[in-house]
Amino acid sequence: MLGGFTRPFTPAGEASVVPSLPWSFAGDQLLIHFQTDADALEALLPPPLHPVDRGDEAFLWSPHLRCHPENMSPNQLGPSRTHYNVCVIGIPCLLRGARTMFSAFQWGDRDWLVVLSWFLGACSKLVTIDQTGHHPMLSPGPYGGGIGSTLRRTVSRHGEKIIEIGFEPCEAVNAQTIEFYTRYLPVTCLRHFPDCEVPRRGRPLVHDLTQMVMSDIQLGEALRGAATLRFFDADNEELLPIQPLKVINGYWIPMSFRLHGIRVVHNYLE
Image (cartoon, rainbow, N blue to C red; front, side, top):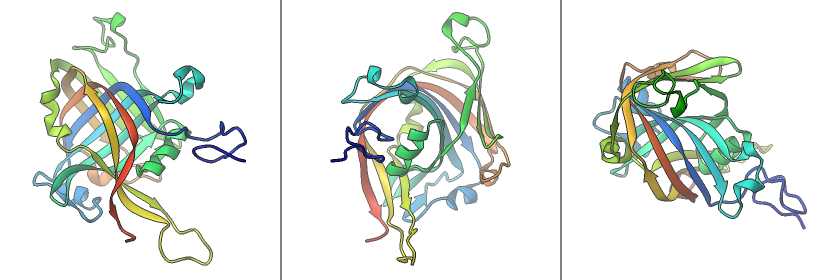
């Protein structure tokens, strides 16, 4: 008898790429609020999603998160299975009149994260994410991680840099200050498993819009400051049409939540 949450199934069920949900998460999120070409953003929205009135605004968020399945202790997992970096580009939009955020692009630095994201509907690609070192005990130097410090993060794939982010926190703000971002949550993702069968069936195996089911969401005191964001022309990427025209602000946000799974909010195959 073979067992496991995902392949590969094994007699003991311990070789699954991804353990079963729910999971607990906690970490720090770097959030960049920027403006770009409204038509280029709208072109990335699949129906029935529609742009909001301020259709030229988008978000990039890139957290470093600690995580573990709730039925397991972090000590039961290898260290590389309990933390990761991710980078997402989200577009504010409307789904049947309700505000949401479409996950248009996503990258992560763990193979299991790529697999999990495709199950949930986010389209991760495997990348390398690097960041300048910072720690409070380095204060008051430029890498202390607090007000007056500097931070630089890069996302690279196949040896090519695709995203460069800079952030200089200037002031502490409360969670209500980022309501312009949180009002578009939950994030909506497009889940798609193509038809690879020969001969073709003529339709994908899975094609729907999903939203993550989360609870116990907590946001700590955030830092706000000046930010920079640049996309690069790299192989197998298509970011230049939404190159930032203006970076409004950057934020550093402590956060935690529980992820239970997803709900399907639109099924294209019905």
